[in-house]
Image (tube, rainbow, N blue to C red; front, side, top):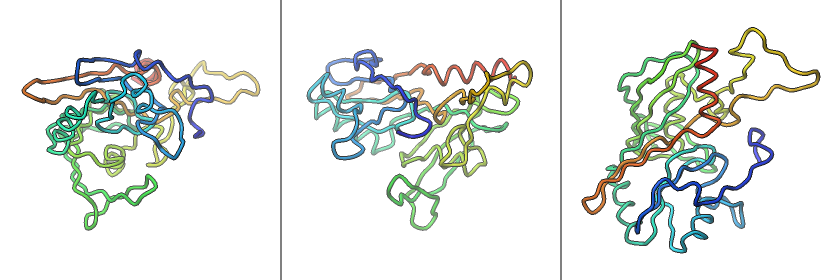
Length: 247
């Protein structure tokens, strides 16, 4: 378990995660600290395993990083999985993420078009020669004194795409230590009246990087689907604290 994962994590009931379900597809609000697929042989509980217990033919249509929360699509049969996979492959799925980044950044339809090379073992880098085409569009949503809530729209779907593209703009996601993002502490934004009990170590407001899959929209067989996921508690708490102490 990573240093910033909660020591106690209760695996949720799969049915409690469901945003939408019909005969063909399930959309869930994935909680943080739960992998989408198996990470290793005989590994930990993950969304795919929970989904298959709920519906035997379930297949994950795309992936979210383990720490990322939000909308995740699950097909209930092979044909739906095939159709949704085609939509992702053809880049016809509209994906919207929200991220909290350090600093004040004014992004208005900022297009980051930088190729990404997957070096293996979850390491990626910007490589204009050998990397794969990657585009993300960024728009600032809410400004705080020292942070910004940003909308991120990945056009392609490369590993760590949003995270590394933001880092190239000197706008790392808070808590994303892989890309030099630092966690946010209450003492950092609440200058007055903040005290700790003797011997107590202050914990960050959010114990992961602040990235949330907010909305996914696509069409299959002429029917449009659009799913939106509410912020999980930690993401919402960080925003409330910034609104209160960093506005």
